[in-house]
Length: 348
Ligand code: A3P
Image (cartoon, rainbow, N blue to C red; front, side, top):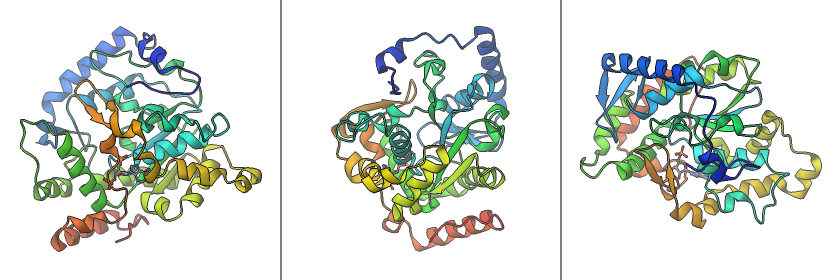
């Protein structure tokens, strides 16, 4: 992944040797990983043979579990860090673009904006894909200028205290109706599934999802972790819904600016800056850009994904095209039960 961050060139970043990783400490994490892995419960994987359950959450045994341990043991947050947290397929790509454009709006003009030639995932790297076995120094987080924009799928309760500590960094969490998440995820992962494995049927994907067995699942526990965190420390976690963003993008982007400490001035508002950001980051715009149609995104040594796969329909309620009435009823019932008493609801 060639990470684009303002004032650092992509090529420089990927070639810098990371000085922050001390080999003894890395070795300890490797040992922890090797000792932990054999004892973890296994479930069927969506693109790998299986997922493992670690402290209540389902992770890919190689990439996600290793990266999580790296973050827990080695990551040094800065108080200015901005994290975008999400359950996969909830709108991460969209929020990456919106946050990047909001935070850097005085730096770039809209006519030649980096997002026109650089994919959102390159502007806003995944922290939990940072640590790779044979490629530990792909980008050096210490050399990123502040505020660092980093994306995570890690569940809130598995984050190290240094990140959840009330004094430090900010989180934006984006969530989405689980029915749309399931459909988006099923279609997405079937595209990535190795050719030697047969495609996963919707029925099978549905069962696994309902049981919580999906990357970083159970979905509901993931969402509730950040939801409760946002109720406890609203100044630290902004909890957003994909559906609200679709309905009122201008309102949500203004909230985003306020929360991140980059409020839009009256002058900016009257000049239409918020509208420009929303337009730049819209599905219609991003999905038609050459960079998002052709180039690949390297997430880990085994996972290379075409940028175009991150843009499918970008709609609310596309689950109606795929899910049976029984599926809808069951998923809605699980969601109702899991979220009962939390104050969090999803539209039908
Ligand atoms: P669909 O598969 O329902 O179309 P993630 O970025 O977390 O992987 O989520 C991907 C989902 O977000 C996909 O949903 C994708 O089409 C949608 N998406 C990507 N960019 C978007 C944008 N700019 N606006 C709205 N939705 C977007």
